[in-house]
Figure (cartoon, one colour):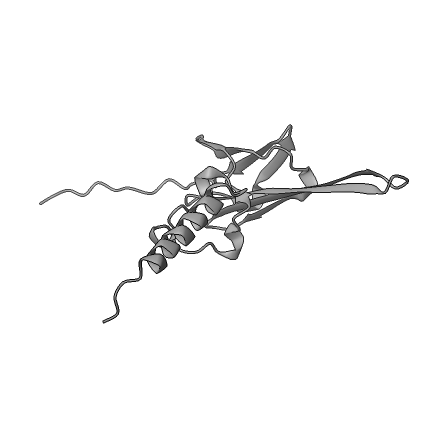
Length: 162
């Protein structure tokens, strides 16, 4: 059996610490960072890319509809994608910006890029009408009106016990 090499152990600890610090200071929002990935959730799917944030959402259920208000600041209306199924609604919005400055005569140039996005899946209960969902977007707030289907009253019959 080989004697433990303390330098190897110190190097391993340093590598683990470097990984932890790089995750801590990354551009990924704090709520979505994995500090100890071996103890966290399974790997993200393609839909759950790490640079996408989960937007703040208010959902209220009324007698005839469900209303969801999703905060998506900085996203243009044409960059929002909404897909509805019987299981739920998937909402995704992306934003990118490129800023260039400089002076060609003086020989310098600066280019900065910003990329961000939001994604959210909202599970839907049984009895909603996904064919008539209404979506509007104003001042960074996406508002969804999800109507409920007309429910037929179930017939009941009282049974006499003999």
